[in-house]
Length: 354
Image 1 (cartoon, rainbow, N blue to C red):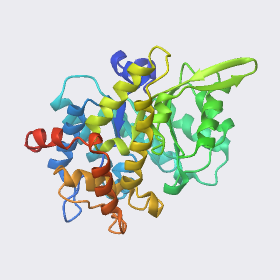
Image 2: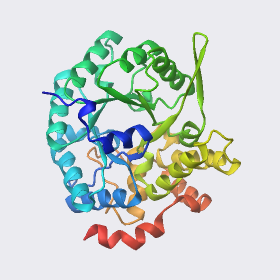
Image 3: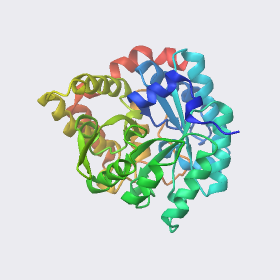
Image 4: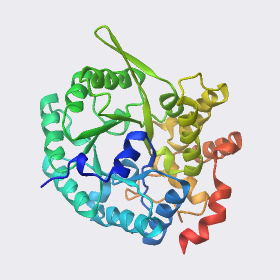
């Protein structure tokens, strides 16, 4: 028997529906590129104490290669154990599933057995399949667990998905959310139009993964026509690799956005100005200058500077910082000192590493 979203704990479903900070959990490795259990635990504790609403594990930022190294289940299990041992407040636990249908379905079964609440479907391995085949893939996984769609940017392996695909996806019974991350305004609108076309605006919760417009996505209303009806949608939260760093500030930012947008009144200019500041930081972390080559290592570098990670090692030895990326990270540190949470980390790091 699979898990249906109506069977989720009410407080967990409310977290997802209301919108939360859900960082994509990085993978802590030692110098030999072995799983660093101590520092993985410290990261989970850091996110919990930062005020996140959930964790996304086994996703792109966790490194898809964990599947080739026997780490998928151990890493997912660690996040559940460590978060439960650290807090008794509810967290929405999201597991990434990838690969062909058999593999993704097996990963969903593992995630459900470990206590995860939903799975984020990465479809990069299905390039060349028709929209109908992709929907069939999603439905197979939805029979096992609640699903979250993932429109991943093509630069890191995503595939183009049009309005009709998202309309069909939104109608899947056990689909509860979509992470919209094409890093592309037009393609973002394709998702919104698809959801409206499916009449699923009250069923599908939108999460931004558009690291180039995080604040804009979360702050601005999106109005889409459905015949003569105007339907207004909002992104409610973020499921982001970017939010794996400076996470305390991210939680404070989302709370501010929710407060300022709650009554439908114009938001402050200072909040709107945050969009460019956050995007500037993301350009450094995600290595935009080099077509995102160092996007995982860049996040690792911030965590290394804070003392949470020992190094920036990735499972793939060829993954690392690009030339000039470290200098860019230093630049945004100096340009936007109000966005880092170094003092918070410094005050708690020893406790998290204990």
